[in-house]
Image (tube, rainbow, N blue to C red; front, side, top):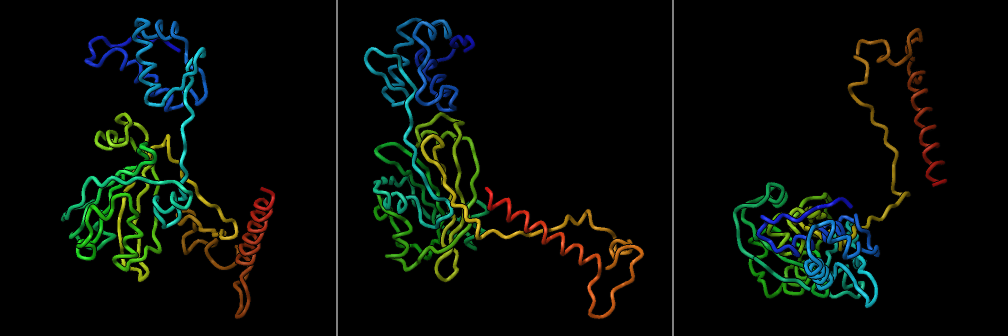
Length: 306
């Protein structure tokens, strides 16, 4: 690796700077899980620091679980524990983890009425009288996600923080408020951690997170919640079930490629062909239908071979 002397004008201690660089390289897998870290001599030369600074940096990384050291052996990048979540299910993180025998701890950071929310929450819930709920979810003291949820204030007026501590919001909705989450739409995007969320999740500011957001409806089709849930990308993996039987082939032409109505190609028959009579199919349409059938058959063959 290229030489990268520490910044001696930086107020952070030298060992913290060295640990920060190595931590980032392990997180973005420049140093892959299970790989041996460079030797102390190599790190001293790379950063231009003393042996004691290097050892203190490595001790910091070991204490936080980023590296693992065995007596007599060089330190290696720890293999992180990954937790899997099926994102297309309406059930929340708590219920999915409970089904797998994992105990998910929930800390409630805030629960308060608000007349403001992200535009998507206001649109989904159909009003501005909302409750804003903020939580951190963790397993074995390791924070996994930061969740911000908006709820209809009138419907959940009796909700309080004590109910939500180490509990499932969806289960509370069903058991105490008669609202059964049944459907919704979800989106996933990669985003950098802002300062507050980074602090709560124990990552550096700007670290990559997976943002899952969407709205949920109850058993009557009434909007129930809007949520934004930031997940540590080094701890949580999103799984998606693929069902080929549910796939449909739909061919939608680009309108910009369609001929103008007065163009010969836009008429039922090809140039030089007579218009179809009553009860007849235009030759051009027959060719289009045949081509679509061929495409479907070929896609089916490829899918079956995959």
